[in-house]
Length: 391
Image (tube, rainbow, N blue to C red):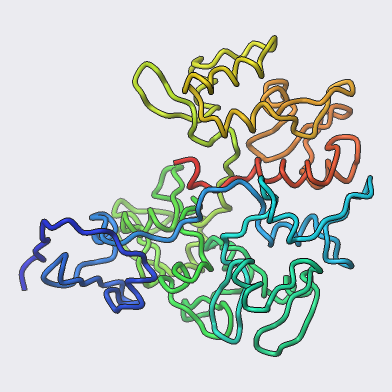
């Protein structure tokens, strides 16, 4: 059999989920065949490179996942958000249904055991699995009601993970199957279901320092659809020649790392007038494109947005009070960043009293660093944005 013939027709990409449902893509081998595209099966990597298949990606939005909220901010006893330093209390429903939501509603992080699927918080509420106003969870398989914290402890609430996180949480079995709900999944099924985040960089691309995502690794052939990491031909981590190793071994050899963090300062939203390219605030600062003198800083950024030099939504976030203060005066996010009050690499804020970095949760618990629970939740989301916003 000769090389596949690729037809030159206009073909709208299909989602990974559609490809699996309609048997265009084999869930284990990753072989793709669609009569409108090719005359014989091709590899998943080639299908991705040619744009025949698109992997799932979270829709843009800067807010926390429910998983993060349960881990850090939700009151375990009441199932609501309760400010430690005021009488402000609000439900998960309130946190989602507001002009600038504090919690994302588009992440498939609710495990529907009865139907072996993942749901968003809104879908889970419609399926009577989530009572958002009172913060309760109903196990769809046993019909048992429990707190959101208990559901999280039972892995019934779990945001999309990296390969590293799956291994470290014990959710990968010895046959390279991903344990999510009641039925083990292949790598491609785990991506399609929402168990794996295909956008987050955490896989070493080769002997150098570059880290790439699951999606990019599949496209480049670094990761196979069977869940094997392909070693470079020049030799790597003590092995010579080409070869494939399983994910457990790749983890042991540090080819799988922790997820790369992105912040609001990495979001593409500043236009470079010289060449028309769009860059992040951090890139624009380093290139000297934005005027960032402290006097009138917020006004100048707002004016730049009015002229089309910076995305209005990004400018609005940068100039708004962020929950930090200086001598009792509220600081905008951009001013806090330029004053060195934000450590964007580690996703921390700097305590002015000690000069040390604190996580947003620690800063909120101190009470004197981040002013309110709502500010802490919004700040935490700004310091951990999804990479799809930074591409």
